[in-house]
Image (tube, rainbow, N blue to C red; front, top):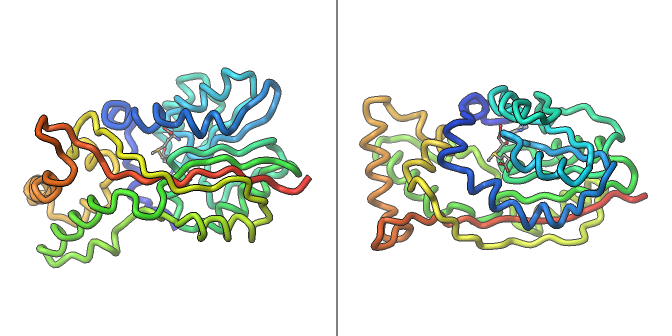
Length: 254
Ligand SMILES: C[S@@+](CC[C@H](N)C(=O)[O-])C[C@H]1O[C@@H](n2cnc3c(N)ncnc32)[C@H](O)[C@@H]1O
């Protein structure tokens, strides 16, 4: 169901150093949520709670859930009501006016189970506003990692931890789960990587790097870096990842 290895490898300090851009770039989807004072909002895959805190600043009453103990602990340190739960199986019943999620749904490999859990968690008329990796996200990085693994006789495709849907696929799933889709769009978003490709791989690609022999990992990463340098790195050694986001706003019938 989940990439369990990855669930156990989220490290708040490494995330903060290499991937703060994830929550920083969450402003557009946060703006779509339009939280208001007193609303009850669930932040699904809240991570270390930086965006959750921003939702709470609107006066909404926010609960964060995340499947990583370390991330839940980091969110709690910010004063967030963060709970350890898996998006596939969380057990909230008609409790929330809105469910929000940023950069987390593509880690959940059974989207229909997640949508059923989100729909259960919402009150009638409740809204679901989210952004996730969309079809084609980090395609160059995936191809390079698969090539490096293939050189070692490893089938990288079997270790991809992400689900990057098209807008049509996700719209259909939302509608089958009972939602009306007000907006859904794939958005190409080339994303500067503050600590380069290696920092990104360290933070997000554990599932794909895990099958490597530990003594070979450094060499394999260096090979991926060289494969990707011509397309993702500029002449000043600035790396930009080929992100594509899927952003949507949907609601249940009242
Ligand atoms: C890239 S982080 C995004 C965190 C936060 N939303 C942000 O914008 O910074 C993805 C988060 O999704 C969580 N996650 C992955 N799979 C999950 C699952 N099945 N259920 C709940 N959370 C999950 C991870 O633990 C991680 O904290």
